[in-house]
Image (cartoon, rainbow, N blue to C red; front, side, top):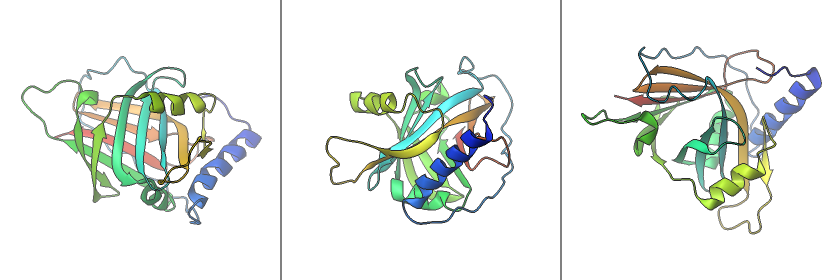
Length: 206
């Protein structure tokens, strides 16, 4: 992982805290153990073990999760979570969020990233669904706006705020762990390399 100075690390921690503080919740640091995944080859093994992950969405709208090989590359995966942005922010105030996305295994299953519909569980509770999306021009515009951000959180300036409120984002490097062609996990990497991941996202085909 790219080395961070103490000043840079503190600045990034403040940015993550700022993302939480939009709803005035205080973060609590909680370490977590990583979920073990069944072993085997992966159909998306060309993607590296370190990826860029971006969560973004209007304050009153839904959360989107984009996975990129690097900040300048097109997203290899874009999911729209039915969870409202405000709800996810509240969950992150606990200091630990584990999102499990599950889909049904079929006889003619293809690549894991091409699955269209996922059942979503957040910290063990069923929280609606996630839908795979084709990246639109507006999605690409948002990713271009945060292209220079390697890790941080904030609010993006938009021409029109709209009924769903301002557009919030959080961007970080994620460690990608492949269990098999039916299971992958993304662990958010802390800037200073200490403690457990505050955000983990699991893709499971069962």
